[in-house]
Image (cartoon, one colour):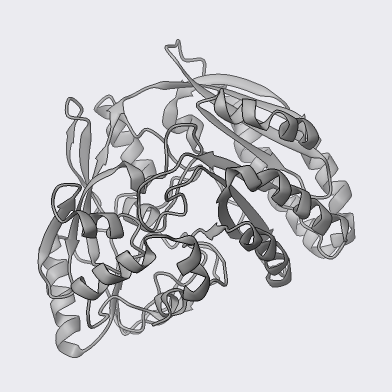
Length: 433
């Protein structure tokens, strides 16, 4: 297809690439990359469009991964599964479950493609399990010259370290070998808790639970905490009615109406948030891991997220409280706080340090620029690292200070894509080229 409008999920990025192609094999990706090189054109692979930035945009050829969506192999005994780049996480979960396998950890949304999620540094929350990219064992890439390479800790380790969360800058990812383990159950406990108590008990909550996170409702002192821990069973899933009531009706249908009302009458938001916080009551259940990790997100929003050193979280939240108290902004979406251990992925926001991920959201159609700017100043004062797929304004001069291996990654890029076949406006902004 040519000159077809493409836009992302949040409609924050709209482009009309010169060409949209849907390759069905690695060989067809090679042909597209070589054709782009012959034409002197740029080329990018998009995912599901769930990034909020223009990270996938191109003025050249846009590759859709829709037909590269198979599981090539699952070897539970070896603890690995090789998956094509375009497979959505929700589909991967079901396929792995059929083999008695599961990913160690996930984020809370599962509509992304595996390559899109890993390339942007997507993560969940966990005491000992880091980002999706940290679970990669091997990558299959099509480089700018059209060659197909595999890389791992043993095979071209520098390319592996740079490309695991590589922003699509090192090559077109066509297949990923992920670490997997036997399927397991999680005991989920979701409990309202005052923010002050969360902060007082923060060390205990995040270190004594396999997975801990909390949602803080702005303009209130109310949170919903989530504690997920592995158990042998038996499974005790939510009833179909309770799951529908909480996850579809309250968290999506009602929340959509609430946000539309808040957009029209922002002065009511503090009172609305008090009611919303009370509406989500405690619940407890045991289910297979991916059903606990993930939930539907149908209400559209714009998001910014930063990974900050975990020891700075109390100060960051204190400063955020002051922003909400100033009445400069009226925010209807909860602030989400998650945790992850240090990882060794060069371009992961969690590289080399234990991190707290603080995510802020604004309902679609509401102004977000000034709100995000005020909070970004707080996050960067704490040496925060932005999620690559979410809104931020950082450039090389800042990122070079907080990513110790960024220059090493750029040297690898110079080797594998010297003519910048895979670059775009976003990469030019964040890496200064």
